[in-house]
Structure formats: C-alpha cells, structure tokens
Image (tube, rainbow, N blue to C red):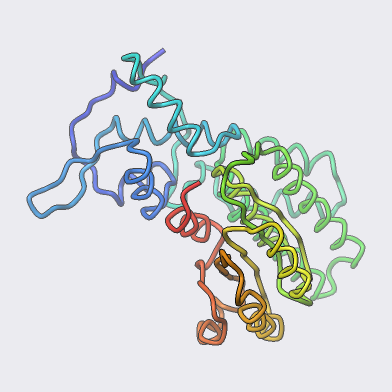
Length: 315
C-alpha cells in the first residue's frame, strides 16, 4: 500500500486548488494548520500559501478518518503519534472531487433518485441510495448537497399539489431519522466544549440545525441537540445549570428570527456567559435581519457554521 510519504512534497498548489481537490473549506484548512499542525504549507515571495501533492493526500486521509466518525482532534493526535514513530498514514484512494467536494456523479442525480424513492415511499431504495452515498461522498456533501435540497424539492412538490401531505411527512421523517441516527452514532467526548443546538421559538423546521449538530459532533464537540421550537426561558434555565460554551439557534422566518432578540437579555448575568450564535434561511434571504439579533451570525449553511465554530472554540 502506498504511504503518504511516497507522494511528492514539492510545493505547487494554491489554497483554492487544494480546497477544490479535498472538499475542505479555506477557513477550515487554516484552522487545522494553526491548531493541529497537520500540514505546513510553504510560502511564496508574496507570502501566499503553496501546498504539495503530499499535503492533498494527507487532507484526504484526515477527511476519511472523520467520515469514519473520528473528531478532528483525535485524528490530529493519531497523525502526530504516527509521525513520532517515523511513520506516515497510508494513502487514501478517493474518487475525483468537484468544486464542492462531491464525487463525480452530479448531486442533481443523487437528488433525483432519492426524491423518486421517497415520493414512492420506497424506504428500502431510499436507504440503499443513502448507504451508497456514504460510501463515496463526504458527510457534509451528503447533508448539504443531497439531503437538504431533496427535502426542499419534496416540500415544493407538496406545495404544488403533486404529492400528498402524508408522502411529504414520510420523506421528512425518514431523512430526519437518518440524520439523527448519524448524530447519535458519533462519539462524544465528555471533556469537550458543550454546545447546545436547536431552533428559535415556534420554528418547526429543525433539519438545518440537526445537520449543524451532526457536523459539530463529528468535529469533536459535546453537542446537545434540542430540536424545534425551543422555549427561551427554559433554555436559559438549563444554560445556568449546564454552562454550555455556545448556544446555536436557527430561524427560517422573520417571526421566528425576531424571537431570538429575547435570548440576549435572558443570558445576561450568567458567569461564565455562553456565547450565542444563529443562522437559518431567513438570514440568507434577508441579510438585514442579522442587524436585529444580538449574536454571532455563523454563515449561510451548516458547513460554514461548523468551520466558524472551529475558529471560535477549539474542541
């Protein structure tokens, strides 16, 4: 088996190229360099980063270990333990990646097939498709480029009267159950920073926050997913006892986004005071809504949000 040490270490690739070939966001890559010393890119005369084929191979190995359920901190420890004994990880033979980190089959084709299986209420076929996807795609790509767009397409089909509401409920609960099973299967370190993830009061769509909870737990955080329609006073009472480092809530409408304004006052006086962060579709559609919420906007999707949390709060 080819080892990563057998791959050329000549610096030649820009950060854009590396991110395209590995599916790792630039902000995540820089965080891994700074916190875990996984790779050490060389610099040009103009101080731009340059990476080698070996760096790309190492990043693919890191992603493969994380897809197997390991946190980034445990993967870093594994890598440095190997290097202390003079060894390197084995090279991971991976499928070609497109710009967003997906395998060669277009995401639209995965969505079409999954949509067809779910609207036919064919659970075995839908399960088989997701198993196949997990064998070839990264977890973030499956969540953000297949499951969430498929759910949106199913919701639109119900709105147009093309499928029954029972079919829409079946599809939503199937995909939600799949994500929840992945979340519960991720190991959770009790000593890691505690993060509470859920939805604003009266917000019933919790798939986006569940995806974020899954990605954060995979990164090694102690994540507690509290789901839809979180009561803020109850959440504040819990925060006083549990002392989370971070609370993340999502909102998809203006009404539910406005309710998030009240959390800041409820967290006042706590020592230590948890940070509050938020996201959701309404903040992407109407960026001006962010000005009304006293907290940290995490980004336009769960991938960006997970990378932002990694910058703010090392696991």
